Length: 243
Length: 325
Image (cartoon, rainbow over all chains, first blue to last red; front, side, top):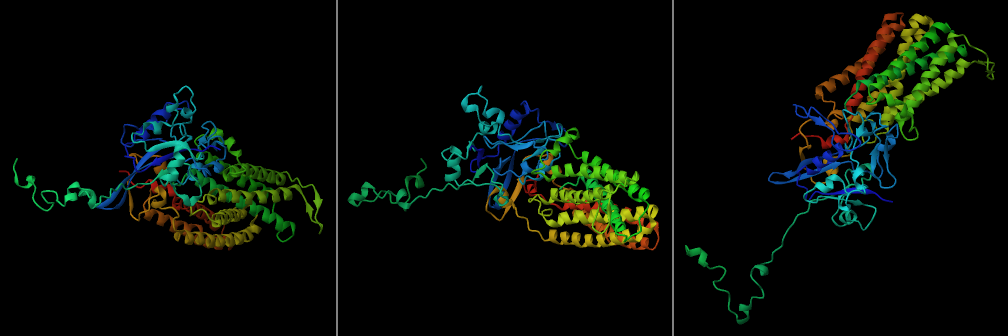
Protein backbone atom coordinates (compact mmCIF):
# COMPACT_ATOMS: atom_id res chain seq x y z
CA UNK A 1 0.00 0.00 0.00
CA UNK A 2 1.16 3.46 -0.85
CA UNK A 3 1.30 6.34 1.61
CA UNK A 4 2.40 9.54 -0.03
CA UNK A 5 3.87 12.09 2.33
CA UNK A 6 6.19 15.02 2.77
CA UNK A 7 9.38 14.89 4.79
CA UNK A 8 10.46 18.31 5.96
CA UNK A 9 14.08 18.92 6.86
CA UNK A 10 14.16 21.48 9.66
CA UNK A 11 17.93 21.58 9.32
CA UNK A 12 17.78 23.39 6.01
CA UNK A 13 14.45 25.24 6.10
CA UNK A 14 15.25 28.95 6.05
CA UNK A 15 11.69 30.18 6.57
CA UNK A 16 11.46 31.97 3.24
CA UNK A 17 7.70 31.23 2.84
CA UNK A 18 8.20 30.20 -0.79
CA UNK A 19 6.27 26.97 -0.12
CA UNK A 20 3.42 29.01 1.40
CA UNK A 21 3.05 31.29 -1.60
CA UNK A 22 3.53 28.60 -4.24
CA UNK A 23 0.96 26.41 -2.46
CA UNK A 24 -1.52 29.26 -2.39
CA UNK A 25 -0.83 30.14 -6.02
CA UNK A 26 -1.30 26.59 -7.29
CA UNK A 27 -4.31 25.71 -5.19
CA UNK A 28 -6.15 29.00 -5.65
CA UNK A 29 -5.98 28.48 -9.43
CA UNK A 30 -7.34 24.94 -9.38
CA UNK A 31 -10.69 23.52 -10.42
CA UNK A 32 -11.77 23.27 -6.76
CA UNK A 33 -12.21 27.03 -6.67
CA UNK A 34 -10.13 29.83 -5.20
CA UNK A 35 -8.81 30.04 -1.65
CA UNK A 36 -10.26 33.45 -1.11
CA UNK A 37 -8.77 36.09 1.16
CA UNK A 38 -10.97 38.46 3.10
CA UNK A 39 -9.96 42.05 3.43
CA UNK A 40 -6.56 41.33 1.82
CA UNK A 41 -5.37 44.94 1.77
CA UNK A 42 -7.20 46.08 4.89
CA UNK A 43 -6.19 46.35 8.50
CA UNK A 44 -7.19 42.81 9.43
CA UNK A 45 -6.53 40.50 6.48
CA UNK A 46 -7.39 36.84 6.69
CA UNK A 47 -7.55 33.93 4.31
CA UNK A 48 -7.30 30.21 3.79
CA UNK A 49 -3.91 28.57 3.46
CA UNK A 50 -2.98 24.90 3.22
CA UNK A 51 0.53 25.50 4.44
CA UNK A 52 2.02 27.84 7.04
CA UNK A 53 5.63 28.42 8.03
CA UNK A 54 6.06 29.29 11.67
CA UNK A 55 9.16 30.32 13.57
CA UNK A 56 10.25 29.18 17.00
CA UNK A 57 13.17 30.19 19.16
CA UNK A 58 14.73 27.31 21.04
CA UNK A 59 16.95 27.94 24.04
CA UNK A 60 17.85 31.01 26.03
CA UNK A 61 19.82 34.00 24.81
CA UNK A 62 22.65 33.88 23.82
CA UNK A 63 22.42 30.12 23.23
CA UNK A 64 19.42 30.16 20.96
CA UNK A 65 18.49 28.58 17.70
CA UNK A 66 15.83 29.80 15.31
CA UNK A 67 13.74 26.97 13.95
CA UNK A 68 11.50 27.57 10.96
CA UNK A 69 8.67 25.11 11.03
CA UNK A 70 6.46 24.48 7.97
CA UNK A 71 3.08 23.04 8.94
CA UNK A 72 0.43 21.52 6.72
CA UNK A 73 -1.90 18.52 6.84
CA UNK A 74 0.17 15.51 7.93
CA UNK A 75 -2.04 12.98 6.08
CA UNK A 76 -2.20 10.80 9.20
CA UNK A 77 -2.29 7.06 8.69
CA UNK A 78 -5.01 6.97 11.35
CA UNK A 79 -6.67 10.33 10.71
CA UNK A 80 -8.95 11.38 13.61
CA UNK A 81 -10.68 13.95 11.38
CA UNK A 82 -12.17 11.33 9.04
CA UNK A 83 -14.45 9.19 11.27
CA UNK A 84 -16.07 12.24 12.94
CA UNK A 85 -17.27 13.72 9.63
CA UNK A 86 -21.06 13.26 9.55
CA UNK A 87 -21.37 13.39 5.76
CA UNK A 88 -18.36 11.39 4.62
CA UNK A 89 -16.94 14.50 2.93
CA UNK A 90 -13.63 13.87 4.71
CA UNK A 91 -11.98 10.72 3.54
CA UNK A 92 -8.62 9.00 3.23
CA UNK A 93 -7.80 7.54 -0.14
CA UNK A 94 -6.94 3.84 -0.05
CA UNK A 95 -4.70 3.98 -3.10
CA UNK A 96 -2.23 6.64 -1.92
CA UNK A 97 -3.19 7.58 1.66
CA UNK A 98 -4.02 11.22 0.88
CA UNK A 99 -6.65 12.72 3.21
CA UNK A 100 -9.08 14.82 1.18
CA UNK A 101 -12.30 16.81 1.59
CA UNK A 102 -15.10 16.51 -0.95
CA UNK A 103 -16.09 20.18 -1.18
CA UNK A 104 -19.46 19.25 -2.68
CA UNK A 105 -20.41 17.13 0.33
CA UNK A 106 -18.95 19.27 3.14
CA UNK A 107 -21.66 21.03 5.18
CA UNK A 108 -19.17 23.31 6.97
CA UNK A 109 -19.93 22.01 10.49
CA UNK A 110 -16.24 22.41 11.48
CA UNK A 111 -16.33 19.19 13.54
CA UNK A 112 -13.33 17.70 11.68
CA UNK A 113 -11.22 20.72 12.60
CA UNK A 114 -12.02 20.10 16.27
CA UNK A 115 -10.84 16.51 15.81
CA UNK A 116 -7.44 17.50 14.35
CA UNK A 117 -4.82 18.16 17.04
CA UNK A 118 -2.54 19.91 14.54
CA UNK A 119 -4.88 22.66 13.37
CA UNK A 120 -4.30 21.56 9.79
CA UNK A 121 -7.82 22.32 8.56
CA UNK A 122 -9.13 25.77 7.76
CA UNK A 123 -12.68 26.74 6.89
CA UNK A 124 -12.89 28.80 3.71
CA UNK A 125 -14.86 31.88 4.72
CA UNK A 126 -16.28 32.40 1.26
CA UNK A 127 -17.07 28.85 0.16
CA UNK A 128 -17.94 27.80 3.73
CA UNK A 129 -16.34 24.38 3.33
CA UNK A 130 -13.38 22.87 5.15
CA UNK A 131 -10.10 23.05 3.28
CA UNK A 132 -6.75 21.45 3.76
CA UNK A 133 -3.60 20.33 1.98
CA UNK A 134 -4.38 17.94 -0.88
CA UNK A 135 -0.73 17.05 -1.46
CA UNK A 136 -1.43 18.70 -4.84
CA UNK A 137 -3.47 15.69 -5.90
CA UNK A 138 -4.31 17.59 -9.10
CA UNK A 139 -0.58 17.88 -9.92
CA UNK A 140 1.06 14.64 -8.90
CA UNK A 141 -1.08 12.52 -11.27
CA UNK A 142 -1.22 15.04 -14.12
CA UNK A 143 0.34 13.10 -17.01
CA UNK A 144 0.48 16.26 -19.15
CA UNK A 145 3.29 17.49 -16.91
CA UNK A 146 6.89 16.42 -17.08
CA UNK A 147 7.78 13.82 -14.53
CA UNK A 148 9.91 16.21 -12.47
CA UNK A 149 6.92 18.54 -12.18
CA UNK A 150 4.57 15.88 -10.88
CA UNK A 151 5.31 16.85 -7.29
CA UNK A 152 3.47 19.04 -4.79
CA UNK A 153 3.84 22.72 -5.53
CA UNK A 154 5.58 23.43 -2.22
CA UNK A 155 8.22 20.79 -2.93
CA UNK A 156 8.97 22.33 -6.31
CA UNK A 157 9.25 25.80 -4.77
CA UNK A 158 11.61 25.05 -1.90
CA UNK A 159 14.98 26.68 -2.67
CA UNK A 160 16.88 24.63 -0.09
CA UNK A 161 15.31 21.23 -0.83
CA UNK A 162 13.92 21.13 2.67
CA UNK A 163 10.80 19.38 1.41
CA UNK A 164 11.06 15.79 0.23
CA UNK A 165 8.10 13.98 -1.28
CA UNK A 166 7.45 10.30 -1.79
CA UNK A 167 5.96 7.05 -0.58
CA UNK A 168 6.89 6.35 3.04
CA UNK A 169 5.69 2.75 2.72
CA UNK A 170 8.33 2.06 0.08
CA UNK A 171 11.42 1.34 2.16
CA UNK A 172 13.75 2.34 -0.68
CA UNK A 173 12.15 5.72 -1.44
CA UNK A 174 14.06 8.94 -0.75
CA UNK A 175 11.65 9.85 2.03
CA UNK A 176 11.92 6.47 3.76
CA UNK A 177 15.72 6.60 3.62
CA UNK A 178 15.68 10.15 4.98
CA UNK A 179 13.35 9.19 7.85
CA UNK A 180 15.46 6.13 8.62
CA UNK A 181 18.91 7.65 8.35
CA UNK A 182 18.37 11.24 9.47
CA UNK A 183 16.17 10.55 12.49
CA UNK A 184 12.80 11.52 11.00
CA UNK A 185 10.04 11.95 13.58
CA UNK A 186 6.27 12.53 13.74
CA UNK A 187 4.49 15.42 15.48
CA UNK A 188 2.51 14.83 18.68
CA UNK A 189 3.10 11.07 18.71
CA UNK A 190 1.12 10.90 21.97
CA UNK A 191 -2.22 10.90 20.12
CA UNK A 192 -1.58 7.78 18.03
CA UNK A 193 -2.55 9.51 14.78
CA UNK A 194 0.56 8.18 12.99
CA UNK A 195 1.17 11.21 10.78
CA UNK A 196 2.53 10.30 7.36
CA UNK A 197 4.49 13.55 7.10
CA UNK A 198 7.74 13.44 9.02
CA UNK A 199 10.24 16.05 10.13
CA UNK A 200 14.01 15.74 10.09
CA UNK A 201 15.70 17.26 13.15
CA UNK A 202 18.27 20.04 13.30
CA UNK A 203 21.82 18.74 13.09
CA UNK A 204 24.98 20.41 14.35
CA UNK A 205 27.78 20.53 11.80
CA UNK A 206 31.08 20.25 13.68
CA UNK A 207 34.66 19.87 12.43
CA UNK A 208 37.14 18.26 14.75
CA UNK A 209 40.67 19.53 13.98
CA UNK A 210 43.50 17.71 15.64
CA UNK A 211 46.76 19.44 16.42
CA UNK A 212 48.71 17.19 14.11
CA UNK A 213 46.55 18.44 11.28
CA UNK A 214 47.74 22.03 11.92
CA UNK A 215 51.38 21.03 12.36
CA UNK A 216 51.89 18.30 9.91
CA UNK A 217 52.97 15.14 11.67
CA UNK A 218 54.57 13.92 8.49
CA UNK A 219 56.57 17.15 8.04
CA UNK A 220 59.44 16.07 5.87
CA UNK A 221 61.73 18.56 7.65
CA UNK A 222 61.45 16.40 10.71
CA UNK A 223 63.18 13.67 8.85
CA UNK A 224 66.54 15.43 9.43
CA UNK A 225 65.37 16.76 12.81
CA UNK A 226 65.15 20.29 11.49
CA UNK A 227 62.11 22.18 12.74
CA UNK A 228 60.22 24.54 10.43
CA UNK A 229 61.48 28.11 10.57
CA UNK A 230 60.53 30.30 12.18
CA UNK A 231 59.31 28.17 15.08
CA UNK A 232 55.57 28.44 15.75
CA UNK A 233 56.09 30.46 18.93
CA UNK A 234 58.38 33.01 17.24
CA UNK A 235 57.23 36.14 15.37
CA UNK A 236 56.76 35.74 11.64
CA UNK A 237 57.47 38.28 8.92
CA UNK A 238 53.87 39.49 9.27
CA UNK A 239 54.51 40.49 12.84
CA UNK A 240 57.33 42.95 12.22
CA UNK A 241 57.27 44.06 8.61
CA UNK A 242 55.02 46.82 7.31
CA UNK A 243 55.26 45.45 3.74
CA UNK B 1 -12.68 26.72 21.98
CA UNK B 2 -14.82 29.51 20.62
CA UNK B 3 -18.34 29.09 22.01
CA UNK B 4 -20.86 29.16 19.13
CA UNK B 5 -24.28 30.41 20.14
CA UNK B 6 -25.96 28.13 17.62
CA UNK B 7 -24.63 25.08 19.45
CA UNK B 8 -25.28 26.61 22.89
CA UNK B 9 -28.95 27.11 22.00
CA UNK B 10 -29.18 23.73 20.30
CA UNK B 11 -27.89 21.75 23.27
CA UNK B 12 -29.77 23.69 25.96
CA UNK B 13 -33.11 23.79 24.10
CA UNK B 14 -33.18 20.12 23.13
CA UNK B 15 -31.90 19.18 26.61
CA UNK B 16 -34.87 20.96 28.20
CA UNK B 17 -37.23 19.33 25.67
CA UNK B 18 -35.83 15.87 26.40
CA UNK B 19 -36.18 16.46 30.14
CA UNK B 20 -39.72 17.74 29.67
CA UNK B 21 -40.70 14.66 27.68
CA UNK B 22 -39.14 12.38 30.29
CA UNK B 23 -41.17 14.25 32.94
CA UNK B 24 -44.40 13.78 30.94
CA UNK B 25 -43.84 10.07 30.53
CA UNK B 26 -42.72 9.67 34.15
CA UNK B 27 -46.07 11.09 35.20
CA UNK B 28 -47.89 8.77 32.79
CA UNK B 29 -46.02 5.75 34.13
CA UNK B 30 -46.74 6.69 37.75
CA UNK B 31 -50.39 7.33 36.87
CA UNK B 32 -50.64 3.95 35.10
CA UNK B 33 -49.58 2.27 38.31
CA UNK B 34 -52.03 4.47 40.24
CA UNK B 35 -49.19 6.14 42.13
CA UNK B 36 -50.30 9.57 40.92
CA UNK B 37 -53.69 10.98 40.02
CA UNK B 38 -54.15 10.90 36.21
CA UNK B 39 -53.86 14.46 34.86
CA UNK B 40 -56.00 15.93 32.11
CA UNK B 41 -54.52 14.26 29.02
CA UNK B 42 -55.21 17.16 26.62
CA UNK B 43 -53.83 19.84 28.87
CA UNK B 44 -50.87 17.99 30.35
CA UNK B 45 -49.60 15.42 27.84
CA UNK B 46 -50.97 17.14 24.73
CA UNK B 47 -49.82 20.69 25.43
CA UNK B 48 -46.69 19.40 27.15
CA UNK B 49 -45.73 17.56 23.95
CA UNK B 50 -46.42 20.70 21.93
CA UNK B 51 -44.07 22.59 24.23
CA UNK B 52 -41.39 19.87 23.89
CA UNK B 53 -41.70 19.75 20.09
CA UNK B 54 -41.49 23.57 19.97
CA UNK B 55 -38.25 23.53 21.95
CA UNK B 56 -36.86 20.76 19.72
CA UNK B 57 -37.75 22.70 16.56
CA UNK B 58 -36.14 25.85 17.97
CA UNK B 59 -33.03 23.86 18.88
CA UNK B 60 -32.84 22.22 15.48
CA UNK B 61 -33.32 25.64 13.86
CA UNK B 62 -30.47 27.07 15.95
CA UNK B 63 -28.19 24.23 14.85
CA UNK B 64 -28.53 25.24 11.20
CA UNK B 65 -26.82 28.53 11.97
CA UNK B 66 -23.73 26.52 12.85
CA UNK B 67 -23.43 25.11 9.33
CA UNK B 68 -21.64 26.68 6.41
CA UNK B 69 -23.98 24.86 4.02
CA UNK B 70 -27.33 24.29 5.78
CA UNK B 71 -28.92 23.17 2.51
CA UNK B 72 -26.67 20.09 2.56
CA UNK B 73 -27.58 19.18 6.16
CA UNK B 74 -29.45 16.07 4.97
CA UNK B 75 -26.11 14.56 3.99
CA UNK B 76 -25.02 14.47 7.63
CA UNK B 77 -27.02 11.31 8.36
CA UNK B 78 -24.64 9.30 6.19
CA UNK B 79 -21.80 8.37 8.52
CA UNK B 80 -23.70 7.07 11.55
CA UNK B 81 -21.34 4.10 11.77
CA UNK B 82 -18.43 6.28 12.86
CA UNK B 83 -19.67 9.78 13.72
CA UNK B 84 -21.58 10.74 16.86
CA UNK B 85 -22.66 13.94 15.11
CA UNK B 86 -24.26 11.85 12.38
CA UNK B 87 -25.98 9.71 15.01
CA UNK B 88 -27.36 12.84 16.68
CA UNK B 89 -28.64 14.02 13.31
CA UNK B 90 -30.63 10.77 13.01
CA UNK B 91 -31.82 10.51 16.62
CA UNK B 92 -32.99 14.13 16.97
CA UNK B 93 -35.66 14.05 14.21
CA UNK B 94 -36.66 10.53 15.29
CA UNK B 95 -37.20 11.82 18.82
CA UNK B 96 -39.12 14.83 17.50
CA UNK B 97 -41.38 12.53 15.51
CA UNK B 98 -42.06 10.26 18.48
CA UNK B 99 -42.82 13.21 20.79
CA UNK B 100 -45.19 14.58 18.15
CA UNK B 101 -46.98 11.22 17.81
CA UNK B 102 -47.05 10.83 21.59
CA UNK B 103 -48.76 14.21 21.96
CA UNK B 104 -51.11 13.38 19.09
CA UNK B 105 -52.13 10.06 20.66
CA UNK B 106 -53.07 11.89 23.85
CA UNK B 107 -54.69 14.79 22.01
CA UNK B 108 -56.94 12.47 19.98
CA UNK B 109 -57.66 10.28 23.03
CA UNK B 110 -56.40 7.36 21.00
CA UNK B 111 -56.21 4.65 23.63
CA UNK B 112 -57.01 1.25 22.09
CA UNK B 113 -55.68 -1.51 24.33
CA UNK B 114 -52.93 -3.20 22.34
CA UNK B 115 -52.02 -5.73 24.98
CA UNK B 116 -52.31 -6.30 28.68
CA UNK B 117 -49.35 -6.59 31.00
CA UNK B 118 -49.34 -9.45 33.61
CA UNK B 119 -51.11 -7.59 36.48
CA UNK B 120 -53.91 -6.46 34.18
CA UNK B 121 -52.29 -3.19 33.16
CA UNK B 122 -53.55 -2.11 29.70
CA UNK B 123 -50.93 -0.95 27.17
CA UNK B 124 -52.06 1.68 24.66
CA UNK B 125 -50.11 3.38 21.81
CA UNK B 126 -49.14 6.33 24.03
CA UNK B 127 -47.36 3.95 26.43
CA UNK B 128 -45.40 2.35 23.60
CA UNK B 129 -44.60 5.74 22.10
CA UNK B 130 -43.60 6.93 25.57
CA UNK B 131 -41.15 4.05 26.04
CA UNK B 132 -39.72 4.62 22.57
CA UNK B 133 -39.46 8.36 23.28
CA UNK B 134 -37.72 7.70 26.60
CA UNK B 135 -35.15 5.47 24.91
CA UNK B 136 -34.62 8.05 22.17
CA UNK B 137 -34.36 10.89 24.73
CA UNK B 138 -31.52 9.06 26.48
CA UNK B 139 -29.97 8.09 23.14
CA UNK B 140 -30.03 11.76 22.14
CA UNK B 141 -28.38 12.80 25.42
CA UNK B 142 -25.66 10.21 24.81
CA UNK B 143 -25.17 11.32 21.19
CA UNK B 144 -24.95 15.00 22.15
CA UNK B 145 -22.55 14.29 24.99
CA UNK B 146 -20.42 11.88 22.98
CA UNK B 147 -19.94 14.43 20.18
CA UNK B 148 -17.72 16.23 22.69
CA UNK B 149 -16.61 13.35 24.91
CA UNK B 150 -15.23 11.33 21.98
CA UNK B 151 -12.65 14.00 21.06
CA UNK B 152 -9.60 12.76 22.92
CA UNK B 153 -7.59 15.88 22.11
CA UNK B 154 -9.94 18.01 24.16
CA UNK B 155 -9.11 16.66 27.60
CA UNK B 156 -11.74 18.83 29.31
CA UNK B 157 -14.46 17.02 27.32
CA UNK B 158 -12.93 13.56 27.05
CA UNK B 159 -14.64 12.11 30.09
CA UNK B 160 -17.84 10.19 30.97
CA UNK B 161 -18.76 13.22 33.10
CA UNK B 162 -19.50 15.12 29.88
CA UNK B 163 -22.29 12.70 28.96
CA UNK B 164 -23.55 12.52 32.57
CA UNK B 165 -23.71 16.32 32.70
CA UNK B 166 -25.71 16.52 29.50
CA UNK B 167 -28.20 13.97 30.87
CA UNK B 168 -28.53 15.57 34.31
CA UNK B 169 -28.54 19.23 33.27
CA UNK B 170 -31.01 18.59 30.43
CA UNK B 171 -33.13 16.52 32.80
CA UNK B 172 -33.01 19.19 35.51
CA UNK B 173 -34.14 21.99 33.21
CA UNK B 174 -36.81 19.74 31.67
CA UNK B 175 -38.30 18.72 35.02
CA UNK B 176 -38.16 22.34 36.24
CA UNK B 177 -40.00 23.36 33.08
CA UNK B 178 -42.51 20.54 33.61
CA UNK B 179 -43.14 21.77 37.16
CA UNK B 180 -43.67 25.34 35.94
CA UNK B 181 -45.91 24.06 33.13
CA UNK B 182 -47.91 21.89 35.55
CA UNK B 183 -48.97 24.93 37.58
CA UNK B 184 -51.30 25.72 34.66
CA UNK B 185 -51.97 22.26 33.22
CA UNK B 186 -52.04 19.91 36.20
CA UNK B 187 -51.67 21.69 39.57
CA UNK B 188 -51.94 18.38 41.46
CA UNK B 189 -48.60 17.25 39.98
CA UNK B 190 -46.57 20.36 40.80
CA UNK B 191 -44.93 19.12 43.98
CA UNK B 192 -44.15 15.71 42.41
CA UNK B 193 -42.42 17.29 39.40
CA UNK B 194 -40.73 20.02 41.43
CA UNK B 195 -39.48 17.33 43.81
CA UNK B 196 -37.83 15.44 40.96
CA UNK B 197 -36.47 18.71 39.56
CA UNK B 198 -34.81 19.36 42.95
CA UNK B 199 -33.29 15.87 43.00
CA UNK B 200 -31.97 16.02 39.42
CA UNK B 201 -30.63 19.56 39.91
CA UNK B 202 -28.80 18.43 43.03
CA UNK B 203 -27.33 15.44 41.16
CA UNK B 204 -26.37 17.81 38.34
CA UNK B 205 -24.54 20.01 40.82
CA UNK B 206 -22.53 17.02 42.00
CA UNK B 207 -21.54 15.86 38.50
CA UNK B 208 -20.83 19.36 37.16
CA UNK B 209 -18.73 20.15 40.23
CA UNK B 210 -16.90 16.87 39.67
CA UNK B 211 -16.09 17.83 36.09
CA UNK B 212 -14.93 21.31 37.17
CA UNK B 213 -12.73 19.68 39.80
CA UNK B 214 -11.32 17.26 37.23
CA UNK B 215 -10.73 19.93 34.59
CA UNK B 216 -8.90 22.22 37.01
CA UNK B 217 -6.32 19.47 37.54
CA UNK B 218 -5.69 18.38 33.97
CA UNK B 219 -2.17 18.22 32.71
CA UNK B 220 -1.98 18.84 28.95
CA UNK B 221 -0.72 15.80 27.10
CA UNK B 222 0.72 17.85 24.26
CA UNK B 223 3.39 20.46 24.78
CA UNK B 224 5.31 22.75 22.46
CA UNK B 225 8.06 20.11 22.63
CA UNK B 226 5.87 17.35 21.20
CA UNK B 227 4.12 19.81 18.85
CA UNK B 228 7.32 20.60 16.94
CA UNK B 229 9.34 17.61 18.11
CA UNK B 230 12.26 19.46 19.65
CA UNK B 231 13.53 18.33 23.02
CA UNK B 232 14.32 21.53 24.85
CA UNK B 233 12.66 22.93 27.95
CA UNK B 234 12.60 26.47 26.59
CA UNK B 235 10.84 27.02 23.27
CA UNK B 236 9.10 30.26 22.35
CA UNK B 237 7.04 30.89 19.26
CA UNK B 238 8.28 33.96 17.43
CA UNK B 239 5.67 33.96 14.67
CA UNK B 240 2.71 31.81 13.72
CA UNK B 241 3.41 32.60 10.08
CA UNK B 242 0.95 35.41 9.41
CA UNK B 243 0.07 38.83 10.79
CA UNK B 244 -3.74 38.73 10.40
CA UNK B 245 -6.17 36.24 11.87
CA UNK B 246 -7.10 32.87 10.46
CA UNK B 247 -9.68 30.17 11.07
CA UNK B 248 -7.23 28.67 13.56
CA UNK B 249 -7.01 31.83 15.62
CA UNK B 250 -10.80 32.37 15.62
CA UNK B 251 -12.33 28.92 16.07
CA UNK B 252 -10.17 27.65 18.90
CA UNK B 253 -9.90 30.66 21.21
CA UNK B 254 -12.71 32.21 23.25
CA UNK B 255 -10.87 35.53 23.18
CA UNK B 256 -12.10 36.72 26.57
CA UNK B 257 -10.00 37.71 29.57
CA UNK B 258 -9.65 35.11 32.30
CA UNK B 259 -11.77 37.25 34.64
CA UNK B 260 -14.77 36.94 32.28
CA UNK B 261 -14.32 33.17 32.22
CA UNK B 262 -14.24 33.06 36.00
CA UNK B 263 -17.24 35.37 36.30
CA UNK B 264 -19.32 33.22 33.95
CA UNK B 265 -18.34 30.10 35.87
CA UNK B 266 -19.61 31.56 39.14
CA UNK B 267 -22.72 32.94 37.44
CA UNK B 268 -23.73 29.52 36.13
CA UNK B 269 -22.79 27.75 39.36
CA UNK B 270 -25.30 30.03 41.13
CA UNK B 271 -27.93 30.33 38.40
CA UNK B 272 -28.15 26.63 37.50
CA UNK B 273 -28.06 25.10 40.97
CA UNK B 274 -28.76 26.97 44.27
CA UNK B 275 -31.04 29.68 42.90
CA UNK B 276 -33.42 27.32 41.03
CA UNK B 277 -33.34 24.94 44.01
CA UNK B 278 -34.49 27.79 46.23
CA UNK B 279 -37.14 28.89 43.74
CA UNK B 280 -38.34 25.29 43.31
CA UNK B 281 -38.75 24.94 47.07
CA UNK B 282 -40.65 28.23 47.14
CA UNK B 283 -42.74 27.02 44.18
CA UNK B 284 -43.58 23.77 45.96
CA UNK B 285 -45.32 25.88 48.61
CA UNK B 286 -47.85 26.87 45.94
CA UNK B 287 -46.15 29.85 44.36
CA UNK B 288 -46.45 29.33 40.60
CA UNK B 289 -44.33 32.40 39.84
CA UNK B 290 -41.46 30.81 41.71
CA UNK B 291 -41.49 27.77 39.40
CA UNK B 292 -41.54 29.87 36.24
CA UNK B 293 -38.69 31.95 37.65
CA UNK B 294 -36.83 28.74 38.53
CA UNK B 295 -36.96 27.59 34.90
CA UNK B 296 -36.01 30.98 33.46
CA UNK B 297 -33.09 31.41 35.85
CA UNK B 298 -31.91 27.85 35.33
CA UNK B 299 -32.14 28.14 31.55
CA UNK B 300 -30.14 31.38 31.52
CA UNK B 301 -27.66 29.69 33.80
CA UNK B 302 -27.42 26.74 31.42
CA UNK B 303 -26.64 29.10 28.53
CA UNK B 304 -23.71 30.35 30.62
CA UNK B 305 -22.82 26.79 31.60
CA UNK B 306 -22.65 25.75 27.95
CA UNK B 307 -20.63 28.85 27.03
CA UNK B 308 -18.16 27.96 29.76
CA UNK B 309 -18.12 24.31 28.65
CA UNK B 310 -16.82 25.40 25.23
CA UNK B 311 -14.57 28.21 26.41
CA UNK B 312 -12.82 26.04 28.98
CA UNK B 313 -11.76 23.40 26.45
CA UNK B 314 -8.18 24.04 25.38
CA UNK B 315 -7.34 22.60 21.98
CA UNK B 316 -3.77 21.34 21.39
CA UNK B 317 -3.68 23.18 18.04
CA UNK B 318 -3.44 26.39 20.08
CA UNK B 319 0.20 25.47 20.76
CA UNK B 320 0.90 26.44 17.14
CA UNK B 321 -0.86 29.80 17.38
CA UNK B 322 0.64 31.74 20.25
CA UNK B 323 2.44 34.66 18.73
CA UNK B 324 1.65 36.87 15.76
CA UNK B 325 5.13 38.18 15.09
